Image 1: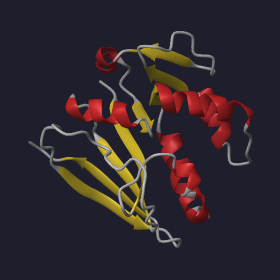
Image 2: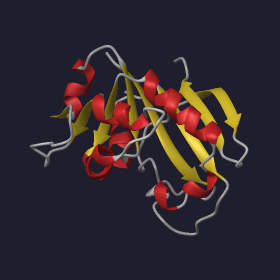
Image 3: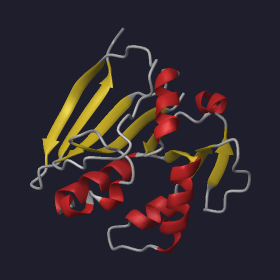
Image 4: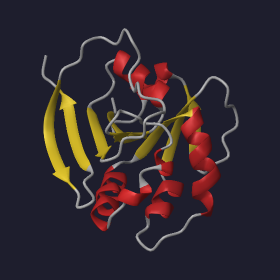
Length: 177
């Protein structure tokens, strides 16, 4: 079974949607390295349809010297969707939640994809949760990463790093039963 790592951008008041609109002022070289290392440690991505469509509209035309765009475009992408039937972004395949357990034993990265993340937690499929907490209060936006009724899930803080911009990178793993 794959190892699934979820990464979410959060504001101090818990907003996690559309981080591109508010996270860029906090982007630093150390944050870029953290994200690059994270991406290169994964063999594939797992995305919900909405996040997939946003990424698929943007990444195919991007380039950079570090190789982030090439990695994003070249790696395998699994899209959990009941409505998307013909993904156009290179190396993309539509799957169901039930097929996740049958994916190759590899490191899979989930970005955004709030509804999918909630489902993955409900199914006990998240091995690691990384939160990039930004020093900003937005005062509005989608604030509930996990829906009501989620089973109690204990996590252990495995790592923390503070970037010079004030962003706190927290890495949690599922606690031993």
